[in-house]
Image 1 (tube, rainbow, N blue to C red):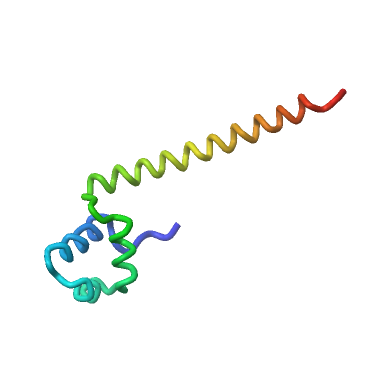
Image 2 (tube, rainbow, N blue to C red):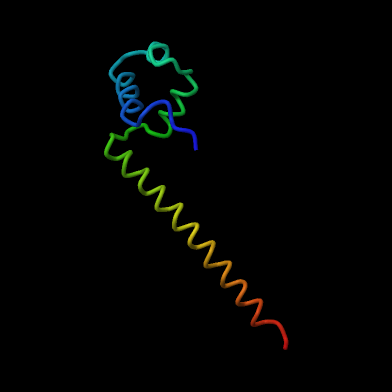
Length: 88
């Protein structure tokens, strides 16, 4: 996976500067990003601080791991069910 250009703390700082009164366009120019990127960040990370964002990433990783485990176990169960249902 591609490494992000901006860290979580940089994203939060950019969002806080706009909340403090700096225009979104000026902030985007300083960072070298498009306004669409800024608004996407705001939709995803708005209202979070750095510790909350770290916790969110941790939970997303755990969720992905659990989904993978579930898919593997479901596949095993389907294989066993198919083997049991066959007539000898």
